[in-house]
Amino acid sequence: MNRPRFGTFSIVACDRSDGTCGVAVQSKFIAVGAVVPWAETQVGAVATQASSNPAWGPEGLALLKKGLSAKEVVRRLVDADAGRDERQLGVVDARGEAAAFTGPKCMDWAGQVVGDGFACQGNILFGPAVVKSMARAYETTRGDIADRLLAALFAGQREGGDRRGQQSAALLVSKKASGYGASDRWIDVRVDDHPSPIEELRRVFRLYDLTLLNREDPKTLLPIQGEVALAVQHDLSVLGYYTGRLNGMWDAGSRASFVRFVGEHNFENKQQTTDAIWPTVLSYLQERAGAEVARRTQTAPIVPDALSRGPGAQPKGGKPSPTHSKKSTASK
Image 1 (cartoon, rainbow, N blue to C red):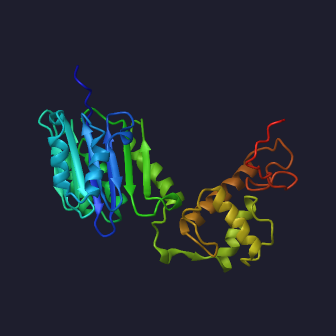
Image 2 (image 1 turned 60 degrees about the vertical axis):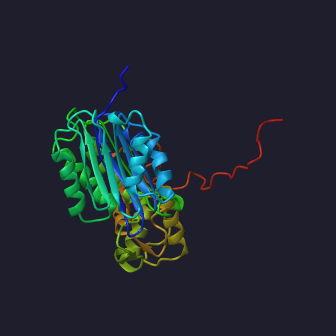
Image 3 (image 1 turned 90 degrees about the horizontal axis):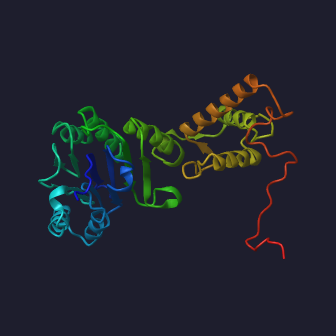
């Protein structure tokens, strides 16, 4: 029985300046992010596709970690696999060397473009322009590796992409101690089934970027004082987080309400100071306050006072939820 093959186009890349490595991929295949992309900061990245051998991901990273070059990793993985003729592989190491392999039995069009610090590969494509345009987009796009990887996906799709259509896409980037909780998993966003997965991936990534990533220029941080402090107090008050005076004085009560807002809206990985605010967080706060004002003016109240308190307000009685002990509370 022939094993199923699926058309895919992907790019693996590493930024040699800091060892950040990642993969972007799209396919007419369900949940491609669970199969193709593998990356480890300061080690490298692997894309295993066509009649994919998922073992090539961890095995490839393990070989890179031993110090083997991307070319040598590709050679070893391919030589040891009897099913290589139906497989496709892209590898890049943290030093920026890249290599790729396309088996002779991969479905047309199949091939790759290898460049400085990246490799683009694909199968069942509209033609070679898909990977060529991906390479060109990665080389010419401004921004960090995430911006460039996404640009490569869009460029490949504009040239036709997978000739059977679209279904899923993923972006995986590993960066040293830069992910949530200081993990190396900096970016891991996936669209498992969607008619326009690359556009949906960009939408999800923008939310991910807003909430979790700190990619903005530190020079744009706004000190929370004067008019900015007054604006933040106002919006926190509308949302029910702040109950003090609107005076622009950034005191302990103002900071405490801001900390609670940051935590409840999942900004704690990004907003790590209470005396300055990122412009994107400020815009988000303003948008939420505006939406709350609209809700109060456009929705008739059902429960008394429900519309005038704001979603950040404490429940009636004002008491925090009890702290539960780790000990069992089961009845004896």
